[in-house]
Structure formats: C-alpha cells, structure tokens
Length: 325
Image (tube, rainbow, N blue to C red; front, side, top):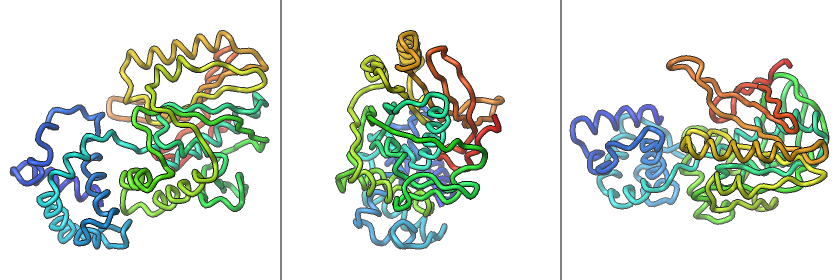
C-alpha cells in the first residue's frame, strides 16, 4: 500500500501537484529525516483519529480496503483539504521503535544471561515509548519452544530460528531515553505510535496494540534526553549486569555523538567486574557492499570487551535467525 502511495506521490510532485505545497521547505532534507515516512504517518494519524472517513475506507487499519486508484484520489483530496494539519505533523521526528525488535532484544538477553548469570538493568537509547523495555512480558514461540508469559497479549508465533538458551531472565530496572519520548499510557501517545505503523501490516498493528496493554501494567522510565547525556549518566551496579540496548537508531546520531557514547561505554567497561558487569546489545544495519546492508544482532560484554554476532534480522525484527555459535 505504501509503495503505491509513495510512487503516486513522486508522480504528483514531479508535475507540481498538491504534494509540492505540502512539502514546501522539505526539498533538501537529508534521507535520514524520513520525510516520506513522516508524511504518510501524518495522513495515517488523521485516518485513525476519525477526521477523514472518506479516506479511512481505504485503510485496513481503520477497517477499510486499499485500492490504488480510488485510494489515491481520496489521499490526494485529504492533502488538499488538510494541508495545514499535515504540515504541522511533518515537524515531528519519526517514532518507529518497532515492537517486533523485542524478539532480538529478548533472545539477546537470554544469550547474555547464559554467559553472565546476573539480574539485568536494561537501558535503551532511542526508546520512543519504551515498549521494547518490556520485552520479557511478551510471548515468543519458536522451533516448538515457548518463552515468556503464556497470557501475554503480544505473541510472536514464529519469533526466530536457531538455538536460544533457556535461562532465568530477571530485569531489575527499565530505563530509556529519547529526544521526543511518547507516553504510551495516553490516547495521544497511542495514536502517535499507531500512525507510524504501515496500515496494511496486521501483525505489526496487533503487536503494538498488545504492547500498549502491557505498558499499562509494567512500568518503565523513559526520559527526554539525548544519547550522549544518557550514556554519561550511566553507572554500574554491584550484583547486576548493566545492559545498553539500541535498535535502528545509530544512523540518526552524528559521528561525534556516536563516538561520545562509545567512549563512555569504554570508560564503564574499564570499571566492570564479574559481579558488576556491562553489556551492549544492539540490532543495527551494517554495510556488506555499496548498496547491500544486513541487520545484525551483536553483543559486547565487559570485563574484556569481547564482541560477538548473535544473529541477523530484518529491520522490524522479523526473519530473525540466531547464529549456530
């Protein structure tokens, strides 16, 4: 659906259609700002709020059925009639901290705790609404084995393939940072998060809605803070492994900020002991060729700073395959 809409938006823009007015001032923004995604989310938000019923009939997330001809006509009319609202929403940074990435986090934590059997203090950079900080409260089914609570409203029916240890995971603390955090406990926050999910991806929508229900029961502290300040505020704790986790966020940080975060982790790593450990767990893209990327789950632990690749996944966490190591 979004592939159709984006192609049609490009066509409209090139002939000077209504999208040129909506996107005025955004022509030279870098790719990383995801202006196309912001635009689609802005319109999706209007659909979900019930303010454009004539377009909602083409959005599966609102009970409709997508049609590339009639749907585009309704989309174009929405752009024309809601220019001001859509432009105001374009200024909001993307919020796509996908719940599907919890599978990589949860499985990664199981691998970690097998090697470092300590309670986990979990800290997430770019946490959005903190939904992935509740990863241990979701249900994962893979290769005939189940993990997590049986009554969880978030169920990964084919969570991953490959070996995962069965260990006792205890998360003692859940803290995240984000430059524009979203409160998942409010209707406004839930609307924002849902608007950034593709309208025709039923499984992603179901996971998000289930995760919002979990968030009402499991507290997590998400602070309005940048990555560097957050990292500099971290300290180790005796009797715990302090885990810094991030997923598909590294590309949004400047080189200077990335270097500052890594320098702080090295400082903390130098302080780490067997009973006061540090780990960095991440799902981030790595370039394999000029136009080829792979999304890698890797784990680094201190003392020692040993790093190993745990597995590979798609950007939203699906198709997760753990390494045979």
